[in-house]
Length: 308
Image 1 (cartoon, rainbow, N blue to C red):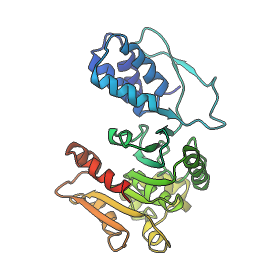
Image 2 (cartoon, rainbow, N blue to C red):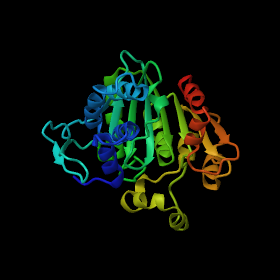
Image 3 (cartoon, rainbow, N blue to C red):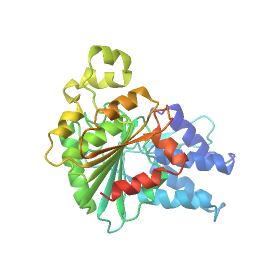
């Protein structure tokens, strides 16, 4: 099994018994963020024997107990386990590779929050998502760098299959109200999928709103190039899709007003009646969600989303 440096470091930190407890907890959190739930739980159980009543460990234990990787056929093979050896670990570790879908169930919940992360191997799993009451959580990561619109491992190989699979998953969870959030390329996916999932609302952070780029734009924005090469038919402008939709969801778009590209993409949607823009004043970065999380302004936006 090939592992990136970030994932290898997460395993080393979590499993190395000579590491300080803070580093081990960070390793556990990173394993969870990358979808290695079974491994995170194994280390948590070990630490619970020696580090009882440690608040961060209690939170990680509660969160990990809720999380699971979605492994529908043909992925759901109980024998699909590998033993990995890493320099610095005294023993091999049994690992089951995750798909790109992670869920957290909430007993008898009627709502579901679908969260599309940006490009990367980690799930966009900020703590406020797990803390929402009466709400299931579906986390989706974009390891293929294709904006979630050309297949998601665990759901399907094309967009239409993913939409069908998400509808089935939402029904299986028992949710009747769908809310969607996303960041960066995941913000584009959130806005796109919301139209086909009958979502009540969307909270999009620094989203692309158009990816049917010209050659000049492709040269400037490398994030769009993988999709343009492999599935150019999936590159669409969201503005006409929303303008022509008979019943679009309510949308909140958050962006740093000093970030030129994010501002450009947000302002394109400003005249739509269902869209509210929330600029982060004076912020020139692309991670507006992280800025708001640090300033304790993330949860109020999430509450607004769930009130639609």
